[in-house]
Length: 179
Image (cartoon, rainbow, N blue to C red; front, side, top):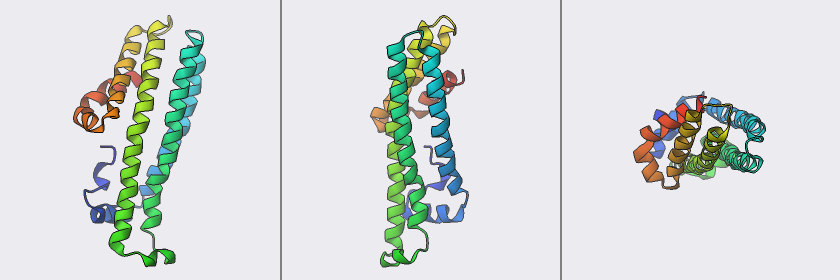
């Protein structure tokens, strides 16, 4: 889903695409910058919604920060294939196909990690949606959209269901987050 055309269905195709596209490293940097900005947004939203309900605002911040921590950790799985596919001397003990399979496995871990992050962000969006809905300073429709988006992210508790519903999950989440 998020991987795009860079990740093929085979370890060989994926390895060839990673090595052919040097901007692959930019994905790692982009992932980390997204985490940093999301932490800032979480802190701002905590402060914004603290007057509405301090406990729920803190719980929402907790879910978001746990999701951010997991996302920061899984960023390593995005960069490891570059190391595994590199021409380092110590990697010569492995066959080329083994290295490709290992790189592919780390990218699979990366994708599975995002499924876990989406669940935490789903709880965050549900709580923020509720806080927006209860607030007097934002339109209630934004809260409803955010809560619907949160329910969509919670479908990642069952990744096959989430894959099947992806276009429908993304639309409310994007609308709700566009506030």
